[in-house]
Length: 285
View (cartoon, rainbow, N blue to C red):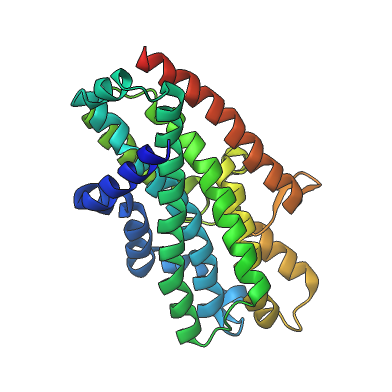
C-alpha cells in the first residue's frame, strides 16, 4: 500500500497539467472575487464595519481551503483513470500485492495530496491577511485549522473517490473535474453568501458535507476579525451576519454545532469510502 502511496504522489506532482487542473477552482474563485463578486460585500450595513477587507479575505480564505480539499483530491485520482486506460492496473493485479492494498493506496495517496496542497494554499493566504494588517492566528487556531484541513480532506477524498469509481475514461474524468470544481464553490457558499440564496438552495448547501468543513474553517479563521469588526455592534447584527455568510448553519430554530459538523464530516467519509471501495474492487475483478 505504501509503495502505491509513494508512486501516486510522485506521479501527481510530475503531471503539471493535472496539477494545474486541480488548482483551477481556486484560481477561478480568486479571479471572480477580484473582478465581479467583491461587490456582494458592498452594502450599507457591512460597509460601515472597520477592517472590512480583513474580514472579507478571512472569509474567502476559509472557503478556498475547503474547496482545495475537494479539487486537489480529485486531481490526485487522475492516476486511477490513467492506470485503467493504459492497462497499467493489470500489472498491479498480477503482482503479489493484495488488491485491497492497491485500492487503499489510491485513496490514501489522494488524501495525502489533498492535505499537502491545502496546507500549501493556506500559507500564502495567511501571509496575505497579515500583510493587510490582520492578526496572525494563535498557535491553538493554527492547530485547529490543521485538524479541520485533515477532516475536510478525509470527507472530500471519500466523496471524490466514489465519483471517480463511476468513471471509465479520461475525458469523463476531465469533465467531472471541471463540473465539480465549479459546483463546489457554489455549494459551499463562496461565489454568493448562503444567506443571499433561496431557502431551498440553502438547505441543499447545508446538506453538502464539504460545506460543513467550510463553516468550521470560517469559525476558526474569522474569529479574531469578527471580534474586531463587530466590537461594540449589537449582537443581533452579528448573528445575522454569521448566518448570512455561512459562519453558522441553522435549520429553522436549530443551530448546527461544531460537534455536529464534525460528525457529518466523519460519517460522510465513512459512507462514501465504503461505497467507493466496493466500486473500485468491482472494477478490479
